[in-house]
Amino acid sequence: MTKTPTMVDNNPNESPSSQLAFGGIGGSVLRLISASSQCPFKTSDGVLLNVECFGPNYGGGGIDNIHASTADHSMHKRSMHNSDEWPLLLYAHGVCESAETWGVQTLVQYCAKHCWRLIVLELAGHGLSENKAALGRATCPNFDDLVNHVVEFAEQMSGNFSRSRGFAMCGCSLGGALVSFAVQGILATRRDKTEQHEHPDFYGIALLAPSLGVNPGAIPPSPVVTALKALSFFLPSHGVLTPIEHPTYACPPNSRRNFSGRWPLSTSSMLLDLTSNRVPNDVVSGNVQQTMEGLPSLFVLMGDKDEIVPLQSVLDWFDAVPLSSDNGEKMLTVLKGAGHGFFHERLKENKKK
Image (tube, rainbow, N blue to C red; front, side, top):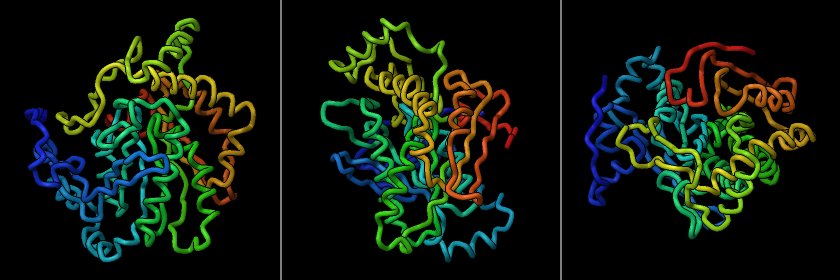
């Protein structure tokens, strides 16, 4: 068992690398792969968002283990000469999370092995990202604002790494829902580009336990929901009778990037409306077909014991999604015995097409 590192305060005099994801003292102790750079950008609505970039020069103590386990180390070294062409995996995390989680570290190690560049967006009010004025940490009252941020994230990063062969979008929980709703904007942005040959190909999306439904048992009685929604307008960043977040998924364990405590009222209200009204209505009305039209490929990973998002809700949404061509791949993988937080745990293989 790994000993939990001692908590240390952030020090502005520390080296810049200590501010990179997994680059602090805790990350060194656990031999994690750290980010190689940050690519912050300001959104069209004026929010400065932090972006952590991993690869091709992966840092941290864990990189030796990755190279040692790579099947063909010489092939990996040769690929470094063409690292500008590495495909991109653009990732959006779940509510209250950040770039410093066990799930992200899993993706980092996978990308390091397979010569992909992982780029992680920290949502507004999360991690090192700023939020709109008067909104506190993890406060997300407007789902569409976050969707627009993900669209701009994809545009910004595909422009920054224009020599890449292509990119795929990936999201977990809330991030999965954001990525699915961002597809229309990403495709529209690419159609508007007059020189598409200078931009990486869009491969499709991968969703991990996406928030595309909600367990009816998790919904409070209607009068309580109405009261909390009203209260969220006046106290958007306060937590009252909302879920309590325990960031046991933090990696390293002493990371302070992840939110802890009761969810802000406006965040809870936004997620409840998304999962209990908007997504189900989109499935029934046929809006899913319209918003996902042109998607090259789709991969969804779910647990059959998800206590938050019913598997059937995701199946209904999945069945409604069209692909842009017969050559596109559409696959759903169900993990037996896995709950909503499987991404931050050890994965069990139980694939189903």
